[in-house]
Image (cartoon, rainbow, N blue to C red):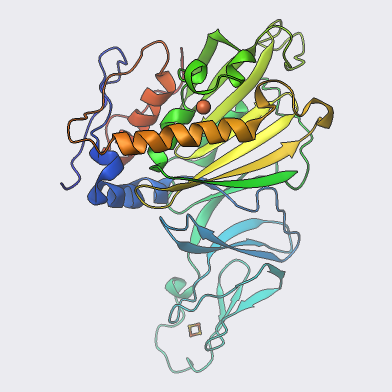
Length: 373
Ligand code: FES
Ligand SMILES: [Fe+2]
């Protein structure tokens, strides 16, 4: 079946989930690769890697999905840019390893670019007419930076400030955190499931008592809530009695509550999960219709609290989630299955994810700015 536009009712009480083809049809996969991911913001895999003065860092954007060869380049004034890493002559990749340089020289026929991507020299082109033009410069992707983390987007649908506003939740306890410059730990998980099934699972706490018997002892299920923003949401989990919680200042909106974790989702495939000990960034990389790779980047600020509370054993929680969504991947092959309705009290984040997908894929009405649930 080929891709066909779909709509998600903005009222969760009436809405039905997207057609099952979203997870298993190659035309729908193609539509995602053309309409969603090129217009999305993505975290640089080097995370807080900050090449100083003339630093170059090659980066393949979303391998197995976009496979776009990019180059993060920081010039002598520390201005960050994201350039195409493909020569504008005949397509040779320019930089293969992170390095420092004042300019870029193509290894095929010697074309030279500056760190802004402008063509500086092109041997044997003296007689070419109307040359060079802007089209001979390296194309650029948009870049954004937040607390030392760098992001890029090929053709962003939203400007960076609007996209990142979820992480700028007023007086968020993480805004002045002193993150380590490199991840304390990096882990990768291969999940035999469509990326959207993985995201859906990450966007609701509904399954906690069923899938995570251990974790659910650390979290107060009744008070679990989701706050929606323009292009993402934050799930707020309060701690059970005696479990690790944030130490919040008196003026904080959640002061007086014992918060076990803030789980921030940035559309379409990124989680920033904040725990009393620090931050776990989860990158969900689509690798085809039935497979995704999940990378955990862990930044520990308070080692004495690691191992405690909701973020105490992320490895076990991830394996439980991966096993659950792999089973759903098998379930959605059923010819009799059609996606169902949303729980109005527990699936607001999931409903928002599907509305954003519909907006990117089909161009429906603009998303509301902020809704609290
Ligand atoms: S491909 Fe780069 S100079 Fe020819
Ligand atoms: Fe889970």
